[in-house]
Length: 79
Image (cartoon, rainbow, N blue to C red):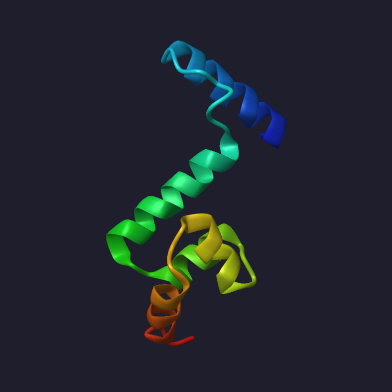
């Protein structure tokens, strides 16, 4: 399935649910799932890997986590 096919499918689902497809997209769903994983586990490194970010700062920005807290969590995870 291509990215565009997935986006069309998502638009159809949103229409069926009566939601405005201009307010939701594939990226917002991707971010939402990872945000829920972060909220449940507090594992910022796992979120970084799931999002495919090379820099922790990108993950922090996307999830809206405070940098000091993110660095504290990151230091708790061994690579």
